[in-house]
Length: 174
Image (cartoon, rainbow, N blue to C red):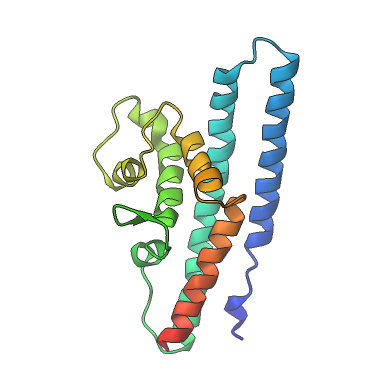
């Protein structure tokens, strides 16, 4: 086993996800206690909370890709690009993977205030549109897709599966 196979990044990401999920639980509690804190407020808060988790997942992707490329280097293989790595997942829409969706949703979250209501025509928006994420609360739509539609109860399950898959692919390639 190569030292870079150890996933040191998943623990902190799991802690971030658990903390954000507790915050979301508090939103429901607040909704029950404060009549003015309605579904619109909950969606607004949810976008920020889950968007932050997606950005943390995006950082996990970069760290994982660094590790994968160290493994590849030790096996005499060429570097795997970010674009190629993000394509690796069995769930796709219009040739965009679920990993690309997570990455694009994180990019959307970081740049949404710059865009306003007029989304630019770029890679990020094409991926979101491929997964039909075009509503008023796109980050919440992504959460719904990942959890309810595709069965990943936690984003950490999705991203750690992706990392493991890249390691298997790398070993099979050598």
